[in-house]
Image 1 (cartoon, rainbow, N blue to C red):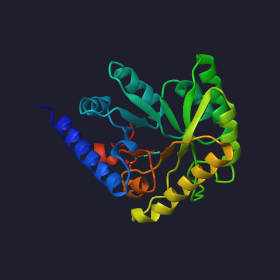
Image 2 (image 1 turned 90 degrees about the vertical axis):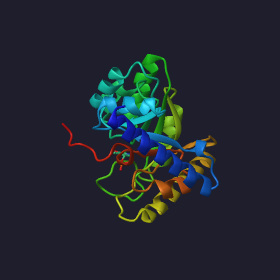
Image 3 (image 1 turned 180 degrees about the vertical axis):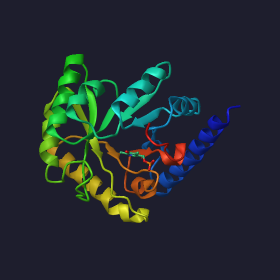
Image 4 (image 1 turned 30 degrees about the vertical axis):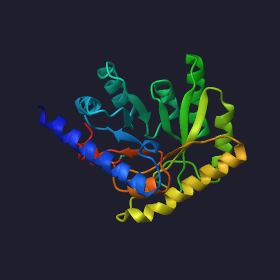
Length: 235
Ligand SMILES: *Cc1c(COP(=O)(O)O)cnc(C)c1O
């Protein structure tokens, strides 16, 4: 049997066990946390191998790379997540092609996704990306901008706002990311009250910090390196 396939299947199985264990310790059910395997820079063959091992949700950061993989894997039943920075002029390639867009961070992008989704006669599920730590180089809206963009997204009938996403700064110590995750949950809870809707999803937690993220309520964890190994240089 294919060596790479076995390696990927083994890592996936161990990660799933750990996720279930962390969820259990936090009083949550394993089914409450969806593992999004972040396949950016990794070949479509890796995604196929993981699909054979039962993985359904995959995350991609780059439009062209993602669409090429979708085409190569069109025979599989996969759920694609767009998690990368997205320019509004590329929204037309994304709407309808990804089950969930995690990284909506401007009114312009929200409107572009809404417009394309409407023209396709569908509703695009989205999350709003919030830059909690306020790092200048990270994308995401500020906490102050969140209520307005959330209201705008709610009013757009081509969009369905289902929650929030964040990406904390890189910390050597995962515990340091915990306050960021806790804050995202608070912001979500506040919006639910304010807007009178349910926002079920919190997309937070990567290879280095998924444990505190799950403990703080993540419903989607975006994990690449732990499954695929380190990323090859982009080529
Ligand atoms: C690359 C990436 C991930 C996965 O990171 P790992 O550390 O490899 O698990 C998660 N989220 C986003 C937004 C990413 O760009």
